[in-house]
Amino acid sequence: MTPETDFAPVKSYSSEWNDPVPVGPPIDTAGAEDSPFVMPDGNTLYFFFTPDVRMPVEKQILDGVTGIYVSKKDDDGNWGEAERVVLQDSGKLSLDGCEFVQGNTMWFCSVREGYTGIHWFTAEYKDGRWQNWQNADFNPDYQVGELHMTADGKQLYFHSSRPGGKGGLDIWMSEKMENGSGGQIGDGNGTGAGWGEPVNVAEVNTERDDGWPFVSEDGNELWISRDYGLWRSKKVDGKWTTPELMFSPLAGEATLDNDGNIYFVHHFFRNDTMIEADIYVAHKK
Image (cartoon, rainbow, N blue to C red; front, side, top):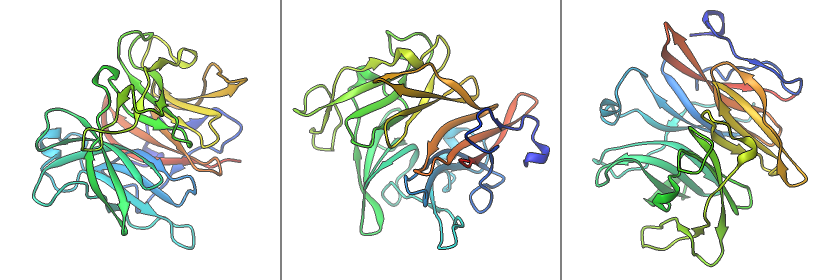
């Protein structure tokens, strides 16, 4: 699919950004690129890729290509060929996605050998590659879905359908517990940093699905996905404002670099069926 054949082209509803365009090759392909995450300097882009969205997950885990990928810009500012991020031992199966990177640590969700269902893991970037992956599950009562942490590492934003919300998926926030109490992230040895009881971010939630949070580096913008669009809330006097629609339709999972350029996934549908997904970018004016 291309913008010319798109039945529902995405556009900007804000004067702050130009209309979004596909990132293009070599990142965007005829398959599905999803869940983008750009590093703050804007030079490294992680995303999830699967060659065919119609393929069930039972086959994706076996196809040898579905998973997390990374692309880096060259000296001329062009994106390089994407490479798969290997997060499993050779000969063992895993299906990894929903990646979040902070410094030399990657959080990602995974379905893999030895575990039942979806679990959170971390990996360490060392000696030029991601390694030392280990289980990093949160307190199961928190029901942590896709997540983002503030730049100082002290607040965890995530979506969840846990009880006590407004309905559907809600955005929740948990504070890091310096003494290690509260909900625990494991490090493979039964220890880890604790997270306090989640608080519903009521200012940004509705009775519908509000999910896939992203917090800007300065901590003053909270982006969420809702109603097939991207919405932004600003922090004013320490409180989040009512979100405003920024990009729609079929736009989700925002991620921003420090120049304010926003990357997100745009889905393509035909006859009410998703057939492809590409990474788009809207450049800050």
